[in-house]
Structure formats: structure tokens, C-alpha cells
Image (cartoon, rainbow, N blue to C red):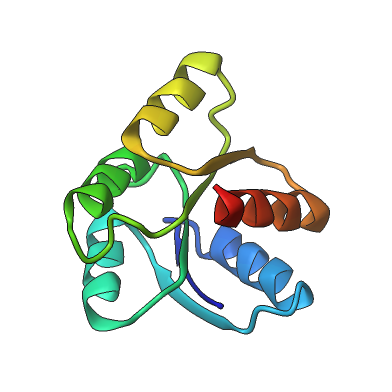
Length: 121
């Protein structure tokens, strides 16, 4: 599987990529914000997006709405990994179109389970 990791923190992108690598997923693209994420989606084929919420230029929710608005990307599974744990935030993300939601910090098992669940849905 090919993943696009969208997070303004290079450290968090590295943590997520290392986690995916441990789970057997070696093909990962990176973007530092939603705008860059949209550029990456236009240039590369991916199977799943993992995005943060809080980013400059374009938030994760704005990014997801743009992904869902495009015919070429609207069907991609999206996992949001964020510190936003409030129920209202989770509801807003789900309404925007995320398939699953992970609150930081997370374990590799949590990421694996959420990816599998997002792919089933």
C-alpha cells in the first residue's frame, strides 16, 4: 500500500512512517500541510491518506474536504491522527469525510487496527 502522510511536524511524519514501516508498509509520501498534500496527490497515486488536523495554510479538515470534493481522490480512505480529542472535533472530522480517527499518542497496534477498519469501511 502507498500512504500519503500529511503533518506539519516532520518528527510526527517520521514517527508515523516508522510505524507504517514496522507494519510492513514501505511506500510512503510526505507533505507538510494540506496544500502540499493536494500537490502530492496530483503527482502520485496513493492508497490511503493519514493526516493531522492542526496545520498551517490548510487544516486537516479543509484538506479532507478538498480530497472528498475531487472525483479522482474522493474514494481514498483517510485516517486522521491528531491531538484533538473532543467529541465535537471527532464529529466534525467524520462529517468532513475521515474514515477513522486516532488521538495522539498512539501505538503501532492502534494504527494497524484503524487502518484495517478504514479499509473495510
